[in-house]
Length: 226
Image (cartoon, rainbow, N blue to C red; front, side, top):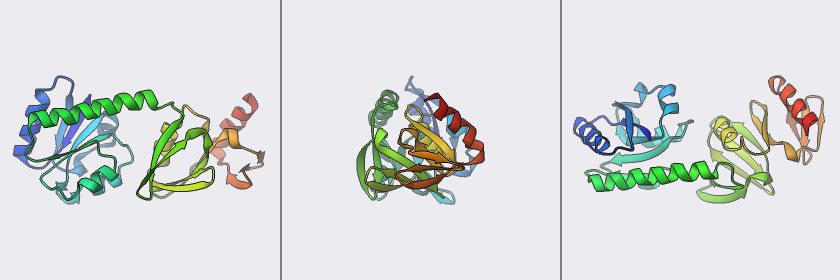
């Protein structure tokens, strides 16, 4: 598994590097003292991040909230106060400094199990959605469509409308093995729910959804092939 460390204190950096070196299942791609040093390419390569909370110029929780690419996160901090916030942002584990190698290894095993579960469940029929401080289990095939607004995504599902803090790109990846297609910069739809297509609009349960110029050809080809 590939990871990075975001930690500004040298003793903590050295301890984490020591623990990583002791663990043959981990490859560290770098240690960063601040979030501003990170590149998109690095984030795309890693499986998980060892993340401190108190960082120069920012807070690790705020970083998590605004992170579009979502590697697994192990929080490493001397503060207990952020645990609930961290788990609300889907952190896999929360390590309070100082922590032992045994505790570190337990967190790594949780990441490993989480990655295995993700691979086996990516194409499954159900998923959990965190919205309004609640986890909702929904059936992917019952999602009608998704609409993005700034840093949020509305999920129109059966008789519900759920608002989640996430990116449309992430949802497109989650649903790529299912009956979903991007039809507009702001819309991802379940094409099995389309009632009709008329001009540059499609309709799902009497809701009009715009079709973007760059997406129209792929949509029409898909419909023809059904």
